[in-house]
Length: 261
Image (cartoon, rainbow, N blue to C red):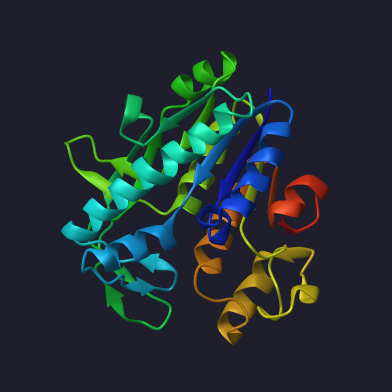
């Protein structure tokens, strides 16, 4: 079985027009598919309305107890169910899931992490994925159900954890690659990885790991693109057939940045 795992985030999720276009193209994809979404901008906006300011470090959100409540409400509730409803209107039998639902993704709380500048950061209630229940996902997919995954997982002991959506997409792809031919697509507002973030004409069409690390060290690749690429290369190393970073148009045209080993 061939499967497309599409992770959508950034402004694509937040803006009605771009989300509608993305879901049109996603619905048109042939074969089995899974949609993984973020929603960080919405979580930040609603958190600020509730008096909580987001703290981001190298594209990763620090999650204290109050922030965990906000992201759970936004990711697993508002954003997830809106996407599910929009897919149903397009004839796609979608099922919204968090990692806690049917025990599909278990995580463990991330220990303090050493960042690229040498500092050590405690990210709070943030999860590192431990396991993915591929049998459950394969059963859903075999019945024509399209899972829509929010980036909330659990530890098996009753604790919810905020987990990077790029990581969830990568881990799903890696887990399913032993059973299926997996195409992993990261879809956001830019056409791919750019040499100049302000110039869409500077697209890097093919990117290997060493070049990525050189661009990261020089400040060309920063913030949220770093975990996206780390996860994409990890997926390739563990059997995922292809990884592409692109925008809404690229989901249809195939244009974007292809990661290569």
